[in-house]
Length: 106
Ligand SMILES: Nc1ncnc2c1ncn2[C@@H]1O[C@H](COP(=O)(O)OP(=O)(O)OP(=O)(O)O)[C@@H](O)[C@H]1O
Ligand SMILES: [Mg+2]
Image (cartoon, rainbow, N blue to C red; front, side, top):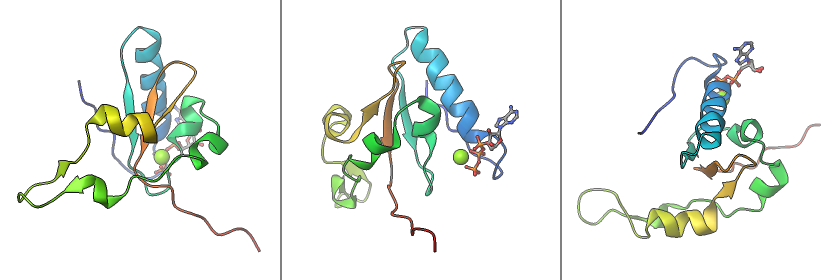
């Protein structure tokens, strides 16, 4: 089953996504969550510390092979998860599309 959550800003997308992921994982399902938000914060909802996410490598464009007229991954999903994912306390595996560096205050 693949679920995509999209919608209006601030409408609860991240909260409901994280809750569903944790619920399904607690009931024995294998759950891979992919945070495609340009300002990702699904990790927080899944219970994964920000410091752990910050130490993961970014998913770079060179993971994609675009030579055949369509996008194909150069590695298997398992290989990518082994190096680029984090796992939450309920067993949800999280992949984050981008880790933008934010400016500090003042
Ligand atoms: N069912 C709910 N009842 C009350 N507050 C909620 C509920 N779901 C989410 N919220 C709160 O609403 C705010 C926005 O939720 P959330 O971050 O999940 O939305 P979002 O759609 O992912 O936002 P964004 O578009 O900024 O990514 C948060 O402060 C969250 O705690
Ligand atoms: Mg959100």
